[in-house]
Amino acid sequence: MFHPYYRNHIAANWRTYSGMQDQYKQDGVEQRSVKRIISHPDYNQMTYDYDVALLELSEPLEFTNTIQPICLPDSSHMFPAGMFCWVTGWGAMREGGQKAQLLQKASVKIINDTVCNVVTEGQVTSRMLCSGFLSGGVDACQGDSGGPLVCFEESGKWFQAGIVSWGEGCARRNKPGVYTRVTKLRKWIKDQTGI
Image (tube, rainbow, N blue to C red; front, side):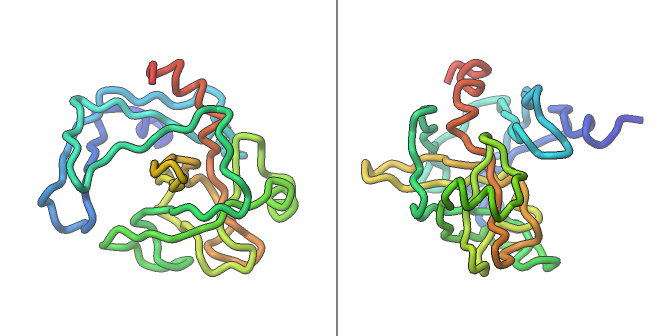
């Protein structure tokens, strides 16, 4: 028997649904099978370091008003502390709660790296960033992992700053969400995809 971790790496086991806003409505949703999954070779199951995987779809998506590309930041791109960004997903609506039927979004703030390191008791690596509020109340939650943290820039473009990775509970005081830092993995993404 395969360990579940490896079963998750078999492309044939996956389908993607793009443009979905309601789990029970298929209109405007584009389904694709997955041709290839590339997970980071340095991924650490204990620390969640290098928590990233790329999916190559069987065929390209057609862009519509509900299916749009996101810009990838250069490795030198700065997402300053205090900047408001958005996290989206169908995860639990509160810690230990029900999953969402409708796609949820939450506005969260990029947290200073030093503060991030203190509140996570040194568990963050340079491949991670914190976002949320130290006062708690707004956060990603179970089931949101792998989802995007996106920021709207003055240029009028949306950039993906992070990938929902881990947290201690959800929306707890002094326990902001921890995200994979896309800028630190940008070179690896380019090496794997040419993009």
